[in-house]
Image (spheres, helix red, strand yellow):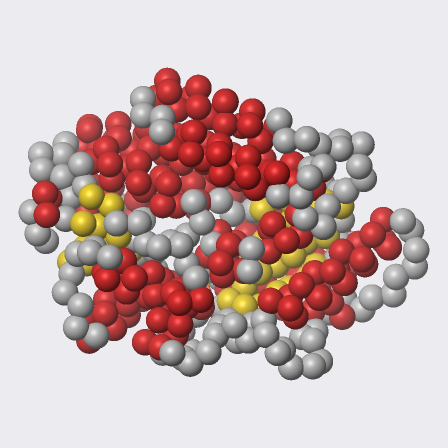
Length: 390
Ligand code: SF4
């Protein structure tokens, strides 16, 4: 590892994670090279150099790294992990591909805190000269609080967007709110900025008396967190007047005990709800997808949308179980699978049909829908393949 003052670190782009990391690395005195926002170009780079069978998130991450290295990054930080799915291998595979391509960089694998506090500390200690455990703890505490505030903003925006009077105003308010919060430094400033920025979102002109559908979003964490990977589905469906809640958030995902402060339901409860259908960990968010669907049904949501990358093992297990949850809890579930061949138009059509079906159910019309009818792929091939050969 090079000396701390020469480190220019980068990470994958995943939703608002860069806002938290920008703050954290800034406090540690490390230069953070934010990966450019993921785009078609990012994906093209990723698929050009990844194994064809790799999951979509790996391809997007690889594209992020190439773009950041081209921007001057010389160190890559990537989350580690372990089975039963492929996630634990991601970092190793990505590092090897990048070295084969001729890039020179240091690679830092951040193993989960739950796997050992010492290994976690050692990874950070190499970034900042003389970093004590105490200083790291205090730094993480403040940055994490800010990260939670960023997540709260997005969570609130998902709810407010359904009621907004003028399309796009919630998204604009969110952008402003995130800028305001990003500028806060001390714990007191963060607390004040969190309140003020939340106020910006609440102040969007709304028609609160408008009747809206309530939909829960579940699925594989990267697909849920990174809007590029799902064609900005949340904004799209929010614009259809749908109130959304999502079961995975950046700070919930990285919190050591998965207390899920942002989603609002701790991991233990989700597992309890999943238990009648799936009683053990299948990797990724497989079990959380089942448990969260049950929770959404119990809370009276109109429907649930599951997002997964093509070939995702944990989510495919969940997909095969969801029809039982659907039947037992009488809640429609739409499963959307994404890979580099997925077209936006096909997804929009399915979302519109789903929303129509939910309105019909709400209004009490008879809708005869076999449990898996929503999850059939469109019959005609998609003409809007967004990826062309590089
Ligand atoms: S959770 Fe799914 S998409 Fe993510 S690494 Fe595992 S198999 Fe791949």
